[in-house]
Image (cartoon, rainbow over all chains, first blue to last red; front, side, top):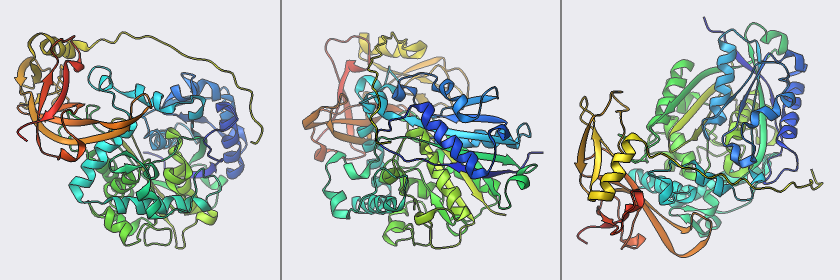
Amino acid sequence: MRKRVALVGVGMQKYASRRPDTVEEMVYDVAKKALLDAKLPPQAIDAVVFGSAVDAFCGIHNSDKLIVEASAGLCKPTIRNSTSGSTAVSTPILAYTHVASGLFNVVMVICYEKMSENPAPQMVFNTVYDEAFVRQIGLNVPIQCGLEARAYLHRYGITELQMAKVSVKNHTNALFNPYAQLGMNITVEDVLNAPYISWPVKRLDTSPTTDGARALIFASEDVVRDITDDPIWVKGIGRGADSCWFMGRRNNDLGRLDYAYLAAKQAYEMAGIRNPAEEIDVAEVYDPFTFKEMQHCEALGLCPEGGAGWMIDEGISLKDGKLPVNPSGGLLGEGNPIGAGMSRLSWAYLQVRGDAGDCQVPKDVNTAVANAWGGMYQYNAVMVIGRD
Amino acid sequence: MEKKPVIISGEINIPYKWSAGLAGSRFFEELCDNKRIMGTKCSKCGRVMIPPRIFCEECFVDTDEWVEVSSRGKLVTFGDCYLSTDGKKLDKPWMLGIIRLDGADGGLVHYIGEAKPDELKIGMRMEAVFKEKREGNILDIMYFRPVDR
């Protein structure tokens, strides 16, 4: 019989294009803050789960070994997880399963990425492609997102203007996020007039490269009442993985993220959610590009399939809308340290607690969803959290 | 946070020799020697895989049959970019597309040539243009170009 698992603490820090501290120092900062937030001593942590997407950013392979001490993990079981960008939610899922198994009562999860140690992160991204069939062609992140965005717009009739509205929403929301790197007062004209990266994606449709870390603490139902009177439970988890060869798989129309629909279905079934658009109060959605937020809103059932343009046109996903999406500013506004995109789940947790400060949405929040995406248009991981 | 850290500079240069694999080697040999695009066929579900695999990922069985597929196909999506992969700004964009090949259930991601971005449409017919001097890699196809414009 699996244990119920609650979130009991979070450690946040400023996201920046270049932080002066080391990976170890970044991790110590968020681990300490998460323990303070949960009012737990480091001895209370039974095991630590790390997540980071690409070691070549920080230039030290197997970088998890650097942060055993800094995570309250000294002489304890530690493990590191990596599923490209979806590390950001698959890692807290791994922490969840540690506790749900009954083997551990209190588990710290830390996601980190230090992208600035390499002055050309795009060169690192260029090394993630299959050598025989893809990399020699020169696929890179800009054109990779262009291939997918064009297919998405073509399939559903989404417009560049609707993408621009998502950019304005998230960059503006980030102005109220004290940890954000790229809060900006911008207009749709600014977005539409920005230079193209690869049609239809323009510079302001993209997220920046970022240094940063996040920590969360998960606790078993057996001990949670000793830690908090207001446990926020993990309600559902889901993951989906499609073939690495995006050009060869059955659904090679990149417009529809079959694997993300699959992950969402698992998470909602486990959470007992039938109509996410009505039952989810706030969403923190993986948005490395504007159109990715839109695709994910659809896959997560926050709007009908193909309806993400309508959703932003109607203002549903605005901070004061019916179903706010990324009131923190998302990866677009807060920064995008790949694996440390666990910030989406961290903000979802703060929203449910009512502790999101100036990012708090003006409505009751009991249930929230966060997701992450990665690989060759390939992975999705979803977590639903909430009060009983 | 304001204080600038001491910087330790360095570089990591590591050479590699990648195996094209069991399926990939046959694919590149055929491409090089015979200008043929070959896929593997799953005897269970009948899918023809491009790129070829030694197994069908859906049926999870070995694929022991090789079949030739067309060098023509359909443009699934495409992208243009004014930044080269090594980060240089370009005057004319370079273009990539995903081409689903006739006779295959998959396709290739490759360059698009002899066309401008505004001449391309999702769903249009494309054909491979082969290099004269081939070396046994994916660049033995020079690019795909639109057919019958």
